[in-house]
Amino acid sequence: MVVIEKVSPGSIGEQAGITAGDRLLSINNLPIDDMLDYQFLTSDMEFTLLIEKADGDQWEIEIEKDFDEDLGLQFEGFVFDRMKRCRNKCVFCFIDQLPGNMRSTLYTKDDDYRYSFWYGNFITLTNLSESDWQKIISMRLSPLYISVHCMDPAVRVKMMKNPAAADIKAQLQRLLAEDIMIHTQIVLCPDINDGEILKNSIEELSSLYPGVQSIGIVPVGLTGHRHDLAPLRSFDQKELEEIIALADGYQKRFRQELDWGLVYLADEFYLAAGQSLPDDYYYDDYCQIENGIGLSRILLDEFSELEGDLPLIAEPRKVYLLMGESAVPVMDVIRNRLNQIEGLDVEMLPVQNKYFGGSVTVTGLLTGSDIVDRLGLDYKGKNIIIPEVVFKDGKDVFLDDARLSEIAAQTGANFITVDGSARSLIEAVLKGEPNG
Image (cartoon, rainbow, N blue to C red):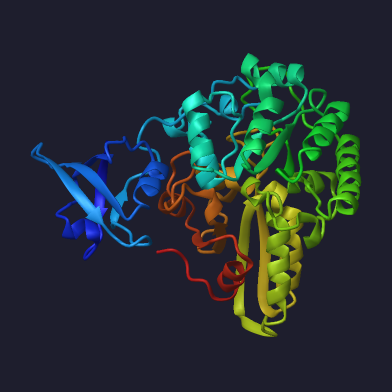
């Protein structure tokens, strides 16, 4: 059962007498647990809806439509029953490292295969029931995004603290046998799943190509709130260089053998090691972009394409680019080029993440309190460009629930939001208007 939020004017649903607030109970007597069920069952040209009106009356509505016609019904959210929660207790879990007193939704551990198919969320496969497997197979939910972490059963169980984690190879093979394509993720932790364990994981996963279409490797994220958690550390410079060399070696081999890179390192490895990001070809079709792998390269390449259209002279203007500390090497390239425009003065404004602490330096995890702490009143009346990635989707709310309007009032700064693209950034730098 799901509440219908909106009904499009002139749609089949409106013509059938369905209104906002009605409840969809079933389609062809089958329950509707999520948008996958809804879309699958309404793709037929004939079916029966069971609707409950606000007064409790139930209507059976027979629908006849063309194959590509939409009913015009809109729902809140994607999953109508309960989200499938994570059953693991991973030693590196980022949610376990969050500070207290944040909004409750940030502590939700999603491990739902439906979100994996629909949004590209990574899942572990440790909580699937047989009915879940049958739904994946019957609806051909492909591709799925799987957090593998390692292929050694004993090590995976140790990392995830869940005996069900040992079955990963059989689970992957079951998906591949049904032609379900897979993108995989390895959260790399020093002294646990790196070194020979990592090599073994890459070898085993590559043997499953082309069903396994990519292997994304990201470094473990550590906050300053790891109280009573397993001891973990970040990679040192030598280890970063070794990981990059290892991945680059595999890339070269797979390009020769498979004509495909297959293994992709997160941007953080290169930035932390002080190395240049790989060129565009490294990322193939950016199949791990859902994991943030390649975002920096896309930004730099898009900027390069637009660079020829930059003006020679701009109206006298000074702006500040607000960012997390790890973004400095990438944004410095853009800043230097923009500052070649006469009349334009662009400065970087890196913000230390004290709220999360630890090794957290990415822009997307900046909070309002850290921004206020960094700015004080020193930037009153000045134009500061801030990327939307710091906000909750569709809202101007930071992770600590501070609002942009509150930050602007406390600091007196003029904030200009950008969507993260090079075009949006250039437009904001040259002529962006502060948020009202």
